[in-house]
Length: 179
Figure: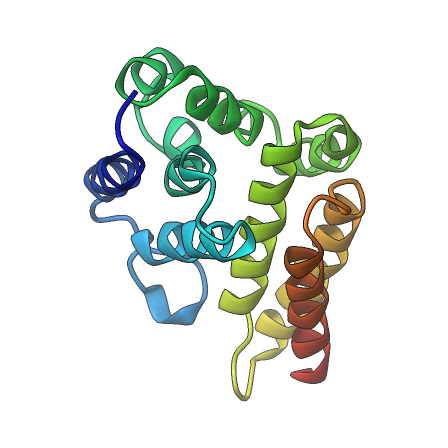
């Protein structure tokens, strides 16, 4: 097994390489790696740095979905648990967006404890990226739509980490206050 600090560092490096050149929705087209860093940091904070595989999976949670990274590659390079967590957080991109969203709501309660934490951290980060000062009507509508949907997903993920649950609730409150 790779030592914990190296595991996280190598996950961050692979995430940066695979997502190179990708931009994030919201926050003025910032590099996509910022989202992955935020999710990993939320997970590190939530677990007080005690779960390196979870933090590594946070860095990599979109790697299969958005890049040519495979489950087998993640299992070989990192661990079976990291690969499994990433797979659990991967949407089937061949499905329409509405169906992917519906499945996230339905599948959330069935996820492993670690995948539930990744889902919550991902939603916290994505809500934050959609908050703008002086938002346009389209940005406001997107924030309302995303936040309402994220609440439904997170409802099936709660209970694994009180701090992360509260952080999500704070993000929702901040989003609604910004409207």
